[in-house]
Image 1 (cartoon, helix red, strand yellow):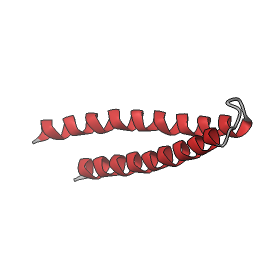
Image 2 (tube, rainbow, N blue to C red):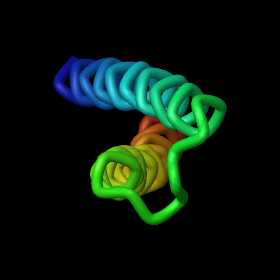
Image 3 (tube, rainbow, N blue to C red):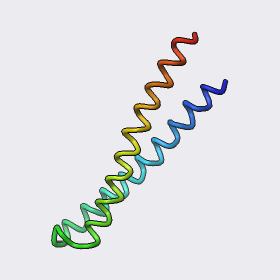
Amino acid sequence: MRLVLKIEYVKVWIRIHQFFIKLYRRQMNSLICNGRIPISKKLYRIDRYLNYHCIRVMILRDKYIMLLEIEKERT
């Protein structure tokens, strides 16, 4: 039961980070389409947030896979 809750918890956090990735990508695309200079502070800030969420998703996916393997071993 505890393992199932951990798996669901990780899935929810992956979805949350994916939402922010979509949001920041949309903001970045709108800034680039509006003619922002690629080295502007706004673009840099959005890129930093986007990178953070992408890394978190990669870490959480690894954790999710690990938890699924543990669950398979128990059953």
